[in-house]
Structure formats: structure tokens, C-alpha cells
Length: 121
Image (cartoon, rainbow, N blue to C red; front, side, top):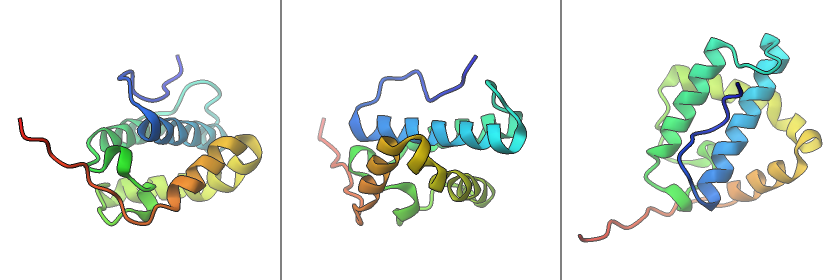
């Protein structure tokens, strides 16, 4: 059973970010840990953590990429793990998933995250 993203329906920007992170972690696990279809325990933990952080992101649709964000919501150990995934797989994404890589690069051009306004209610 593949473990890609959350089951909860997301829209636009957040869906893209969730899918991109999932693809990158799967590629990393396959490359470094030999996980053909299943993620290893460490990569499953990282993916679950990343999905949790994305689900609770205060910027949601207005967010930049996590690497460009001023709010560091990842705990240091997980931040280092996701950085390793990005450093290893990021350059490979241009060849294996060019559209996803281009969209991620364009999302990263947004310098300041736009915080969602809280509605009275």
C-alpha cells in the first residue's frame, strides 16, 4: 500500500505541496533505503510529520515553499531530515517530474507568505 499524502481533500497550492513532498520522500526512500513500493519506518514518520505540518500551516494557500518560510515549524531533527531529502531528490525532480519541479520552483518565488485572515464568526 502506497502512503502518499493525506486522505483529506485539499485545494490548489496545499495539494501541490503535499503531493510534491510525498513524491520526493518516496523517491528518496527508494534511492537510499531500497523501498520499492513501501516507505521504510523513518520515511513514513517523516511523511506523516510533513503532512501534519502542512495541515497546520497558518499560511495555507498563501504559503511560499517551506524552505523560504520565516516560520520554522519543523523540529530541528525533522528539519534536517527533510533538507536531506530536498538536497538529494530536488535536482533529480527536474528530469523525473519536470512539471512538479517547475511548479514547486514557481511557488518558491513567493517571498513573503500571505497569512490567511481570521474571519469573525
